[in-house]
Amino acid sequence: MTQMATYDRYPVTLVRGKGVRVQDDAGRWYLDMAGGIAAVPIGHAHPRWVAAVTEQAGTLVHVSNLFRTGPQERLAERLVALAGFGEVFLSNSGAEANEAALKIVRKWGRARGKSRVVTLAGSFHGRTFATLAATGRPEKQAPFLPLVEGFSHVPPGDFQALQQAVDRTVAAVMLEPVLGEGGVIPLHPAYLAEARALCDRHDALLVLDEVQTGVGRTGTWFAFQGTQAVRPDVVTLAKGLGGGLPIGATIASPEAAFGAGEHASTFGGGPVPCAGALAVLDVIEEEGLLDNAMTQGKRLRAELREALPEGTFREVRGRGLLVGIELAGRLRSRDVVLALLERGVLSTEAGPSVVRLSPPLSISEEEVAEAIDALAGAVARVAEEGTG
Image 1 (cartoon, rainbow, N blue to C red):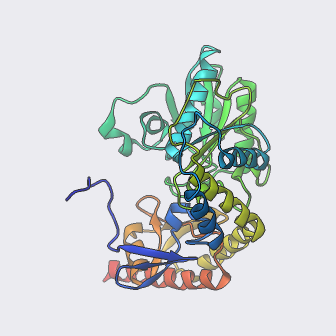
Image 2: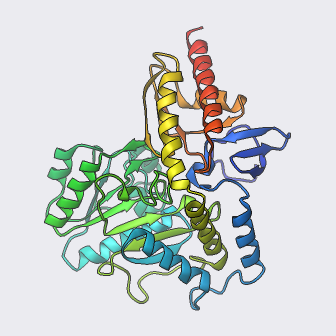
Image 3: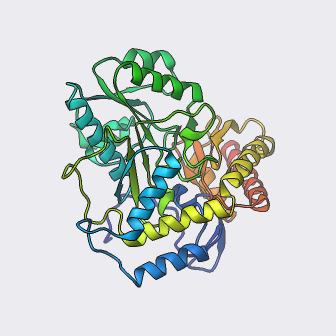
């Protein structure tokens, strides 16, 4: 073996993609309900995206951030306009975007004599040292102890626990509007509003990790723009932003943003991923994919509740096209994901009992119906094998 055994990969080798489908090395096509873990919002090989990336790759690939480039400046302006606030730092991944956010928090708090950060149990913010400490998943932290200090975790959705945890010693509250890896658990809009109020009361920053939920995944450009919208002080993006290319973004209010020399990235915001990101934003806007994510997400959740065999699931939840199916009893998500694979559908696990669906935002009603039929069959088979 030449690669470190860091991934428990599914037994398929993928070689190409087109739209909402991918093909393996044996020539079989699959319906992609995984979407690269929410990272291909406009589908695979969209002509607009391919043209933008190809043209930029043939024009200018890299010059470092010691020089300005047009794609980077246009992307930053576009993101600020979509978010409605802030200044942008571009990096290469969600973990880097969140690491930058935590450095912003440390800088902000240091000037006020505090550094503590409150996050959620079950959350996932990355695998760098600071983001791992922010992550509320002890099983992911255990091999790397001791971690960066100053983080505490409260149960998601528990107003009282959040209120008790946030005081004048807290520099920031960091939340995923929908916990992705933690089981696709949406936070109630009133909970986000309470977090905003607590941060205002105690002079703390509200940081929203929208690495999975951003770029239209929940039916609005950012999840925080949904029902009972709140404005964060810092928001992070990655995954879907590049349409498959590595890029992350940290948007911060001008009062909290980095100053000269306080952060940097050699490859962050390079011309090619920025060109890809601009194409992604154009396609989402011009093809009405925000509305489609909302419509098809509602259909997917509602029809799954009707189609899945009785007694096999506890809940179907999510927002837009980030959907989680919490299985019941002894059913395990890994088994369902593998059974789906046999039926020609890709999905992912969000914990041992939750199957996650995060397809391209361009998915059609017919493709949603195809996915539902496959899921109903896969869950029924796993349930039958478990009782056989």
